[in-house]
Every structure is written in structure tokens, then in C-alpha cells.
Length: 210
Image (cartoon, rainbow, N blue to C red; front, side):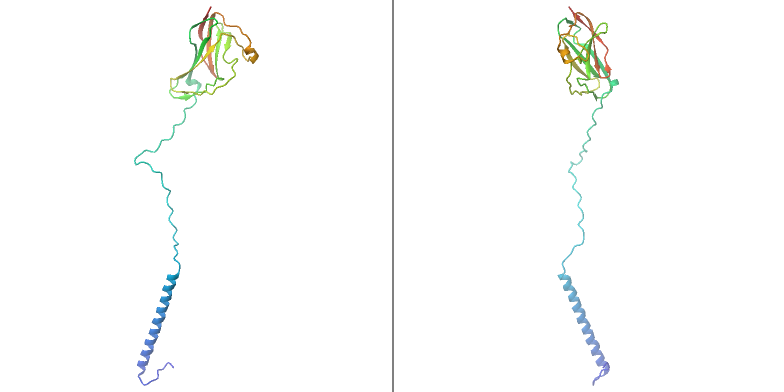
């Protein structure tokens, strides 16, 4: 069957067969290419690329403006060695029976600002006679507390003033004893001193006149 039979030379039949086979192969190739193109057109388009993450927008800041500075730390508590405590009468002499104004003065003697708790229960003004006998204290019948923590700049002072009626008092007195009648300071020489926790002032003299 492979040997061509006919009136024409054998070469003619072989050329016809080769041409026919070539045409068939070309047709098959075109069909396969068309199928591939059609399949690609019908397939859904898929994008496998992951979207690039977007950076969070930075807060807008004026061009050339400096970044805000951190808040400075609060001033430290005042140490005892940085303070000077003093007591004094507002006047050098008072008539007997008249109210007597006394004050405590706390001064920052350091070169830096600081804060100090001067709660009413922590400070005390004491009046003694000239021979050193304790006669009256601002804390003997004092029960209330206060919230006082002043900021003291270098060289700055805070003053606490109290009015003394001239009546005597006793340490650890009960409310009933505080309300009772007491001896009143007579004419003579007295001294006033102050205390703030462990700080104690030098005594300062004053006079009650008759």
C-alpha cells in the first residue's frame, strides 16, 4: 500500500502524499492554536500579586518646626538641710490680755526649687516663759489637717501666721480640757519657737506688758 500505483512516475505520487500530509499537519496545528487562544480568553483573569501595604500617614508637622519638648520633671521634695526655719512675733511687745500674732517662716536656702509638705499637723509654734517652761503650743488643741505643699523657689519663703489668745495649754489635752478655762499669760518675757517635723527654729524673745 505504501508503493504508489498509477500511470504517473512514482516521484509525482510521493510529492502529492508529502503535500497532503503537510496540509493536514498545518490544519491540526491551526486548530490546536485556536483552541488554546479560546480557552485563554474564556478563563477568568486572576491577579495573584499581593497589594503592597500602605504606610500609615505621619502626622502633619509644619516644615522646619521643632518637635515638642518633653515636660520637665516636677521639683523634688525639699531636704531639711536645704531649708531655714524661723519663728517670730509680729510685734516685739503686746499688752496683757490682747491677742498675740505669731508666725513661722520657712525659706528655701538652696539653689534649686523644691516642694515641702507643710501640713497643719506637721508644723507647730510653741511659746515658753523666759526660763524655758513650755506655756502654750499651737498643736495642743489642734485637730484639723490641711493639704499644703508649696513650691519654694531658691530664696523664697512661705509664712504661716497664727493668733494666740494668751491662754496656757497642755500637751495631749482632751477636748474637754481644751474647752476649759486656762491661765492667761501675765506681763513678762516670753520666747516663741517653731517646728516643722524634724526642723526646729531658734527661740525669739517678745514681751507682754501690764
